[in-house]
Amino acid sequence: MKGTVMKNGWIGYAMEELKFVRSFSDFLNLCDKFWFASPVIVKWACRLRKAPLCLQIEVTNKCNINCICCSRDVMKRETGYMDYDLFRKIIDDAADCGVKRVHLYLHGEPFLHPRIMEMIRYTKRQGLGITLATNGTLLDKSRIAEILQAEVNNADHLMFSVLGYSKAVHERVMRGVKHENVLENIHDFVEMRKERRINGPVLETVMYLMPENKEEEFSFARYWRNVVDHVRQVGEIKQQFSQYGNSEVLPQRKVSCKNVWERMTIFWNGDVTLCIADLDGECNFGNLRDSGIREIWNSPAMLDIREKHEAKQFESLVLCSKCDW
Image 1 (cartoon, one colour):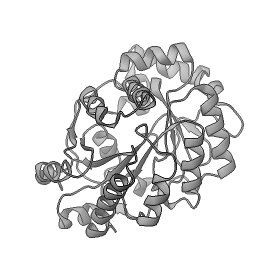
Image 2 (cartoon, rainbow, N blue to C red):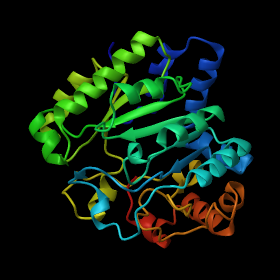
Image 3 (cartoon, rainbow, N blue to C red):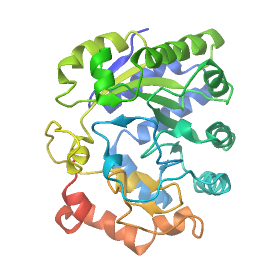
Image 4 (cartoon, rainbow, N blue to C red):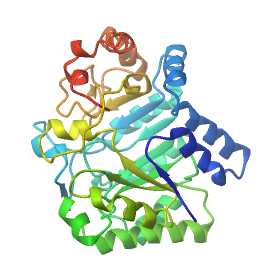
């Protein structure tokens, strides 16, 4: 198996997943991914549907490791776990609104949540695609088997953050990981998915490029493209990391953001905020304990944000003016 090495080519990235299409349902899942590939389609879908295509749900903002590039070092808000009843309320509302995908991560390690497997199963029962991002340390064969039994398919993604090719760099950048353990868990996932002939989740390794690991960029890609489905070397959120001063990051040019049209970002306590860059919820649009997804998505405050983005008035938005997503 040779995976795709992806930097900015979303269309090619989606096309590579033709290998997962085994049924008409799989084909529809693939088509859904093209919604996320084009900012123009995302924008018009938002206007027509008056609901986000994607929810970014922070099931927890706790983490078991300490990456040198992570913004959690300067996070001021309380840490905690999302209440399971609140989670079900959000997922039910998402299914009713026609949300396509749920990202079960934000500022934390999702597999720390004591009910994460129930969350995965419940989301799949509601017919939603799932994306998970993990450092890979908390997986074992038992938990991998649970994931593979949760009705996963090619609509679902599991991204492993592996910030180094070598043991030395991986463990220096992601303080607290055991390099061999993470590699073993990823290889186990690939093999168990193959043995069970399960059409998902799509597996991906992600490397955020920075001076500490830049020299391993090509070694990382060469190794992982022979193991997982996709290899991603990310520049999109480097500027966010630099805001927090935790590690020198590689410069990126400023680009316009489609997230304000595509996704709703939800903290573990139900607060709705602007996006991943809003670490402490400076832009609070309400709470999903008390309000619905469509109500908040179409609120005057969120509509104003989208209008300013369309007019490219980033300087009037404190977070967006500093962002290079």
